Length: 215
Image (cartoon, rainbow, N blue to C red; front, side):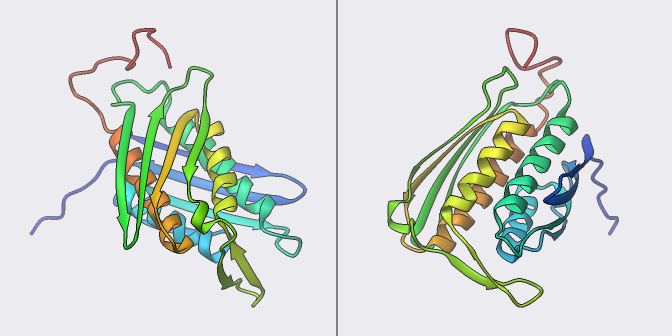
């Protein structure tokens, strides 16, 4: 059987260097959902792999940061760099559907992600719910054997930077959930699904999907 080739319509590469981190991101969409991720934060690697797979985007992320201090700088800077790469890849947004949404069940957790690709100077991130899992953390080990905890607050920080630098209005509603791992998986999988929907090309649309003529 002949393999079906998927030709990415949008691709970009971005490198961000600071005194605290060095992050490189390459993104291609649509893709095959293949990911190569190494941020030094095991759980974030897992979430980005899920985002790539369910968003049908190819993602290559590498980061080095001051994890001996904490995960904050690396976590946020990966969000910044991925957001910049998505914005660069989509360019003027001609022909895309622009809006995407998804309900994602994950065992007892249910998460609703609503994504609007709107480059009108109003990028923002909003989250509601999740009170039952605040204070919980997913715990794992870094490659150097150091314990690393990842919380809903860490995910919020990541998504805030992603939305800001991609120019996306992102709403996440946590409808149910008692296990923070399940809630976080629901958020990243749902975001992938919603981004896939929003970035698909509408063949009926020739130009930018806005009556303003620009987004």
